Image (cartoon, rainbow, N blue to C red; front, top):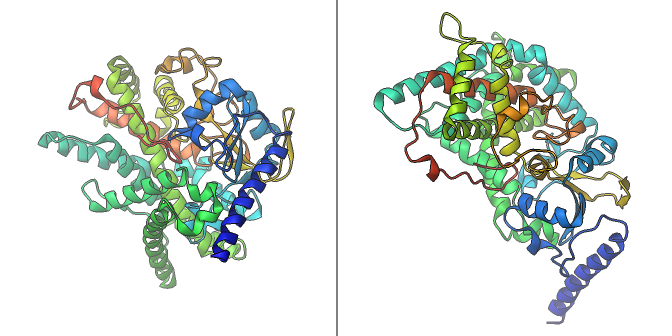
Amino acid sequence: MELLLLTFSSIIFFFFLLHALDLYRARRLPPGPAGLPIIGNLLDVGPKPHESLAKLSKKHGPLMTIRMGSITSVVASTPDAAREILQRNDESCSGCSVPDAAASLEHHNATMVWLSANGEWRTIRKALNMYLTHQHKLDTLSALRENVVNGMLDFLRDSGKQMTNVDIGKLAFAVALNMMSNTCVSQNVTSYYSDDLEWFKTAVKTILRVDGKLNLADIFPVLRPLDPQNIRRQAKAAYDWLDKVTDVFINERLKHREMKLPRFGDMLDSLLDFSADNETEFNLVQIRTLLVELFIAGTETSSNTTEWAMTELFVNPDMFSKVRKEVSTIIGKDGKFQEAKILNLPYLQAVIKETTRLHLAVPFLIPHKTENSVKLDKYIVPKNTQILVNAWAIARDPKYWDDPLSFKPERFLESEKDFKGQHFEFLPFGSGRRMCPGIPLAHRVVSLMVASLVYHYDWKLPYDKEDMDMNDTFGLTLLS
């Protein structure tokens, strides 16, 4: 009994010590809502923190401090505040806060997403740029993506003959997945009829949902061994499944190379070559982890954006017609169009930009962390403070966007704004050294899918458009 009382007293003392430390830090940190002892602002956040924190920022300012248990976060909610973090203090704010769910990945300390911007991180980014996102590499692989889309069109043709409904989200996920798998391992990993597709989709959605979920094990580290919300176990099961799939590809390729068979010339071949030249910095652990990351990041975001774009075009038939008419101008005699030409269609690109603004895939940019004590505006933010950039709030701020809650592609027709991280009122992929490296590929994938879906087929909703659910579910990405 005495031991139990001592343990309980130690826990209470620990939390009050944290609270006292927070009070000291509050003298230097940006203002924020007053919180309760121990739990801080946990009750202020709710199930959709991007929305609740956007509302709180209107009262407490563009840089705001939020406390939840042991976590102190500084939230940026305006373009100027985002620029202060992602441009003026990019290096100091380039650390990363790893959620407990992500720690269930066997080699989470080798992941590009959760690594701090150190030497290992730079090596992985270098490999990714050389073998996936470089302009020349993207152009070389354009025929591959077009072939995957042709397979999608064959499936749609069969579905039309049989008069069966098509789930756009599921279809877009399968296309994005096969584009990524062909790029990486020279094969489709699923068909549009396969049960494997559901396994992939479930694994990816589980990881994105739980990695972004408010986790008591993160807020109160003392609870981590208990995993009170079963989040770590769910994440581990999903990560383990993707690990096994990736291991099969790698092991088969290693045997293929041992037998001196012809090269595939895909990304996996390139990564293995790169590893041979940089074995101490880049080995099979980094290769497997990177492939898992690509299957996650390269499918859900692109498929979500495609699904939202098509949804908006369904409820705005005049816009649908404009896209179709524009796409028809680049159709060749064989009835096909080239990816490069699609990227230069102004109205289609305006639709995609407006989709990424109104239906932002990642509401908070991947959580940053201060690498040292840093001055943000007139405030001093201590080392190891979590930094959140509420890109969702910025993209809907009426100070920077006219009628921000309406879908208006025309706003981008006469605008130079793009998603390359230089326009801080529009940050769907982030900015600075930690911005998403897959922007060029995602842009091509989404453009090709939307153009193909709009041009080749007439669509009819199975219900009235007024009955469509336009809500989202918060996670690491906003899931439709």
